[in-house]
Image (cartoon, rainbow, N blue to C red; front, side, top):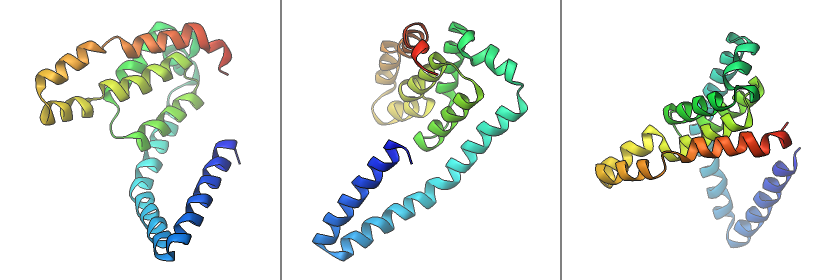
Amino acid sequence: MTIITCTFALIAAVLSWIAWQRSPAVLVGGWKAGLELLLTVLPLMILSLGISQLAQALIPKDQITQWIGQESGWRGVWIGSLAGVLAPGGPMIVFPMAAGFLQAGAGLGTLVAYVTAWSMWGARIIMLESALISPRFALFRFLSCVFVPPLAGGIAHLVFARFFK
């Protein structure tokens, strides 16, 4: 187990103990709700991992490296930014796909641009903002941060990539 898994297990154990102290029903209710959520997101996670692994199997490694690898430079950063905008769904889909990209040989700048663009520019965010706040707000927010994902990816590529293996 990794340190992150151990930390989550410890937090879950402590919260379970606190819930048990309150009432065994609170403990059971909390774990039941967690299991229901798992059953909801598990198919999405399995499909997103499958998609990323199938893409990795179908696309030759040298093409992956050429287009999104560390050597791809700014091209990889821009591809990551565009892919982040187009990425469907929430973190249960995007992060397993990012893990698949990493396994396939994606560079740090590409991954940073992908996740940053997904969180800032994602089509689902812009559509919700337009519908719930206003289209003008969505446009102005997008224009205010339009260069952030490529810039973050570029900084990651130029400054931090040598520490990321």
